[in-house]
Length: 230
Image (cartoon, rainbow, N blue to C red; front, side):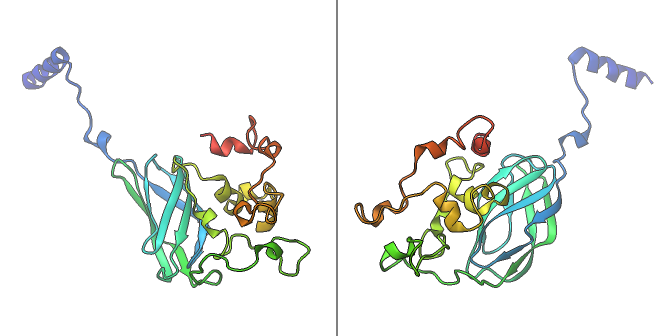
């Protein structure tokens, strides 16, 4: 009894605080839902992971052949911009999240990689006359602006802050954000790039001109632009 009394007195005098060993344990991570669950070879997508225990700066591992370009991480949700290699192994794979404190969680066989069906070749830059494919009145007009030979690299853009995806990426890939700009890729592009300046200033200004009044829709308080000011 005297021994315990002495220990208590020493603690009070020295200010020693006894902390349970479990207080320093890494936070527990839980993964409950992954959307979409299917990714194809050569895909560029945004996937959403719901769960709990996620920390800022957490690492996301989707296995061989899939690269995470950027990720917005909140306590209960991760939104990640990813790209799958053309030769990414087909089949189900684990989704693993590792927090900065060492905590780790995974969803066994949580993501399925399927065979490529679109943009399945590594095309070089577009060759040919760019005018008819941008002319709505032409039989050669194309709606797939982000195909492999044209503007696909826009979907791989990243910002200086990897937790904030670029406007091009969100406008084309994010289902919640892109619905405001049109159903097809050409409509999403034309929402901002209304003019195609090909004749006077050459292809270097392809859909480059943007009416600054359009910017108001995203750069006002309470607008869609909240996505970019976090």
